[in-house]
Length: 227
Length: 84
Image (cartoon, rainbow over all chains, first blue to last red; front, side):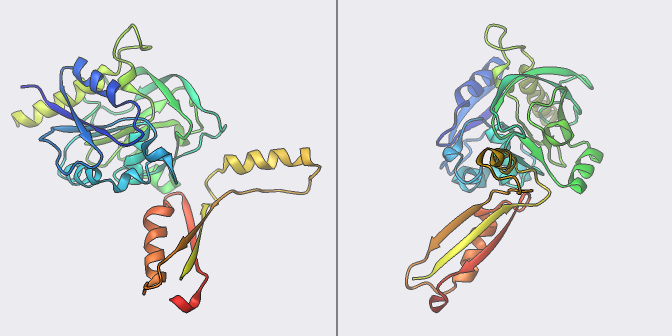
């Protein structure tokens, strides 16, 4: 039986259908979750997609944090369930304090919409386990508020802990230390700004590197099941 | 009725590109003496007449939702002291 990966749709989510398609192409079963669902429908992992949840009002992700489903996602993440946040999903995870740091307006104030070259800095997370060490990948970036920031002590700590998961090779937004994606200490929660779900087919993406994200969580889950 | 104003500002060490953009536009107005512009948010809150703990509730609102403590500071000002 294939793994069930829940994809949360908030009001204003944009990439939930692409996320579901990517999950299916990657060999898992996508399960639709709604922002005010009170159950997680027996999913094995959760994918928070990109978009503009609640209109990005106040701050990106600030209001989604208090949605019904995020309470469940937080509890599940604390128990070790793999949770991925992409773009707005990354912002939601930072606002929820499931990931360190925050995402603010791009330093140049412009919306960036182009493929981003990234280095996978660690494969010791639930969502990067299938990548070779220091693998370079190309994933589309499209965001106006993707500049990763944190205080120096936090940056030093996450660097030392191996929580910096993806780093830009051509920093598109002024992110501190070129950080494109981070993990929590346990490595089950990962967020990144560029979009793996838009890089799953040669016809429509700049690469098929996004499939590695799904392959990674499947490997992580089967490893857990075998243990 | 109790009225509360919450001011939210980016912390000083966080780059404020909007403020920088405004700063860059000032010479076009003929204003050349400004060294810094920072842009924040002002939030006005009204409580109903029966409210008891305005200060406490305002702090919760500001700390949990209106400001992100990772990047922002906030101040809470209760405007109508009679209602506290």
